[in-house]
Length: 256
Image 1 (tube, helix red, strand yellow):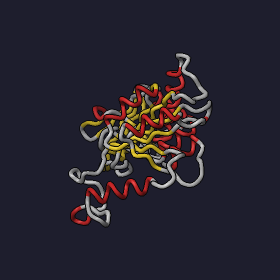
Image 2 (cartoon, rainbow, N blue to C red; image 1 turned 45 degrees about the vertical axis):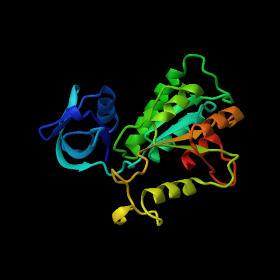
Image 3 (tube, one colour; image 1 turned 90 degrees about the vertical axis):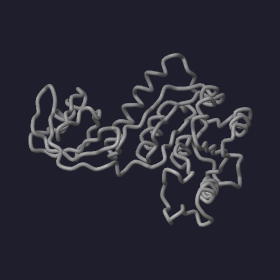
Image 4 (cartoon, rainbow, N blue to C red; image 1 turned 90 degrees about the horizontal axis):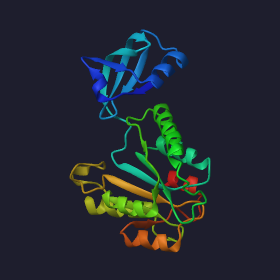
């Protein structure tokens, strides 16, 4: 079943309207949708719908809502990936797969050992990555369209980290503490020694003390410089290991 994303304002009086030109072209020329067909709709905020198309025109598609549910596929924790800018081609794979795995935002970061340099037109690549994110979200039926943000410098990223409840720093020189160790410790402090929350709930609650926003920082092909690694650790980020082997930059974010 095809999925479309609309603004919440497009849902009213038991119907939903699709007016985005790209979506209209895809629905009519590629999917060949017609009156009576069933589609899925996300309002990009909280709700997802099943709807039956009642009219199709060059100006828009109108569908009658037959079912309404809160998002069922969105992770309770919002994860942002700060990805050291890799060589051409790798970023597309990173965006596609991390969107499928539930990441909410992907931020390219120019770090000291990045092979690629910002020559002033990286924003054009960001537009391409955003389209890949949209396509991946629709394919795997996410509730929200993840964001691919404009590229940042390392210094800009360090300022951005202050807005997160938890910052995870997978680092090749960390040999003992894994992500599982880190998260188990946080869960135990928030609930009990067995990792459950008060009342036996193993999920996330508003007052659980568990992080609602998590940043994951991944370096480029050449890894982090010593100065970058020292600064990230000094900021309070949780330094963790992804295992005994050294992962490629395009693998590390997905694994984390």
